[in-house]
Every structure is written in structure tokens, then in C-alpha cells.
Image 1 (tube, helix red, strand yellow):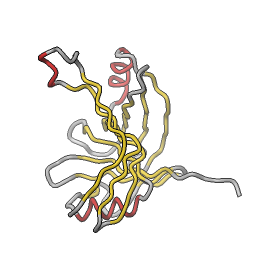
Image 2 (tube, rainbow, N blue to C red; image 1 turned 30 degrees about the horizontal axis):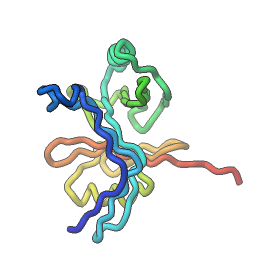
Image 3 (cartoon, helix red, strand yellow; image 1 turned 90 degrees about the vertical axis):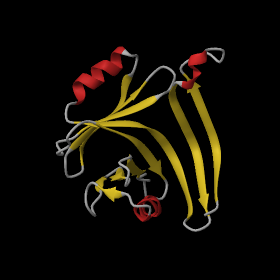
Image 4 (cartoon, helix red, strand yellow; image 1 turned 180 degrees about the vertical axis):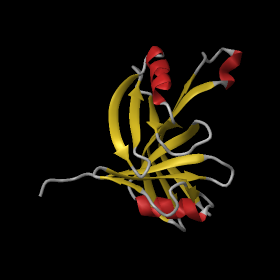
Length: 169
């Protein structure tokens, strides 16, 4: 498969360049990335950031607030498990999503939230690579988004999201 990735990739390291501990990286930001695959077509990733899915968000929110993050967006009643989502942002613009769900999860799940412009194409691509949908064949649909939490064969989790823009008619 031939694949070309275009866009800006920015790394913010957790240590100075002359520091031997440079192997630790705090955050990776991928913005406006376009993946071109000659077999599956073209999709555009519009947001790519870490997310934690938990049964009890409050202690984690409090910890992140102590680390300088603030809640910048909140959404309720998402999907069949009536999840509540908190987007947190720090002064440097780093984002972390925290989602609280009543779903039966054995422990907190760390995943990547990936917003895309074409949900169906990206969903099909990930399913063809062996990802499984936590919701079975369903998606979590709200008036402003469509999403599915997908687990790879090795256990890596992606929360695939498409934001729906309602334009006045």
C-alpha cells in the first residue's frame, strides 16, 4: 500500500535538547493531517488528541486542573451509555478529553480521539484493519457529532468522531 502523509507535525519534548533525558516526550500534536492511500481514498484528520474513558471523571479532572488544565468544553448524554465528555486545555493549547461513561469497563481506558471529515470511510478502513466497535454495529449519535469507540486487535483504542456542522437554511 502506498501512503503519503501531509501536514504539520509538532513535538513538544519534556526536556531541553541538551538533556540526556530527551527520550521522554510529553505530547504529540498532529494538526491538519491528510492521509492519502491509493486503495482506500482520502480522508482528513481534523483533531487528534489523547482521551481517557473512566467511570469516575471528577478525581481525574481535579488532578488535571492542578496541572494547569481547564475545562474548555462539556457535552452530556452521548450514546447508549449516556457518556459525559470534558475537553480540557492548558495554557500551551494542549488538549485532553476525559469521558465518563456508565459502560462496563474493567479499568480506565486511554485512547486517542480522532476527528475526521469522512466518518464512514475512516470507520470502514479501521474495521478492515481488524478494529472492533465497542458499540457492536452502532454509533453514538448526537445532533452535533457521530462517534464510535474502536479497539484494534492489539488493544489500542481510537474514539472516531465526526462533528456535524448544522448550517442555517
